[in-house]
Image (cartoon, rainbow, N blue to C red; front, side, top):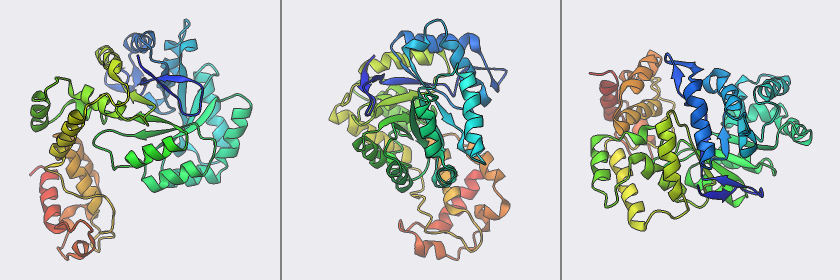
Length: 376
């Protein structure tokens, strides 16, 4: 196992960390973790050098924290640091901070090394900030109820920078980052900014929820023709590790086989582990993924639509389907959109075309997306 310095701390973290949000389950019930499989998986990872375990209040509807604590009995707890998260959407009043943390401490045997504000975006950050979350967290730090404070993030770069700059003592930021998301959410720009500010950067979704492990045929062919043969998952992980600004990579492993494979891959997790030619290959693979997508950046300059069409949302669902070759979930989500927001309400007034920085033929693309997402 390779290790990297954890931001400002005098501690080395394993390049691969264990994300406990996709543990094996029983009877397709997300709340029922198969402990007979999950506990050996976590312990195998720790036995092979993994020393950072990430959980959260809502993972497996509260049972992830419980199973993590069970897995770390028998001497394993002393070998790792545990991170969990304050569920910001559950917070409606300042009193909720103590209520939630108290329950999490009970689940985790009263020891939380890293406590993150979970899933911050502009709205959630404003809410917990105005409820005094920073002063509250500083009291928890002073009392030793939590070890260090950080946040996980899902919004754009400007919001990410705002959150980092709002508090001088963040220890870590957790961001979504992979070769498909260089410009999405915090992106490469956010990765570099957090690193420059001395924060540890914990990367989630390096394989984009497993999607990059199961590429469409055109991408699979490109990987198969690569001079060095690796699985798509290994290419994705090694691309993230290639960045020296990345501190550790979380993998939400759901089987022992995934744990074994990822631990083996982590032997090659040093920065700059890919050659220039290999980085270029990943760039071509990315282009292939996006070749059938609508070039919408989600800037929302086209909004509001005078007819109520949710233009960026429609293109996002369409792109999710065509990029990853799996239309089931996007079609389901499109069907659940309010009828007035769906693309068949477009009257081709072309007001959106005039506003689009990408100069997209939006009405024609909406018609194409609507037909596809309806399964016609």
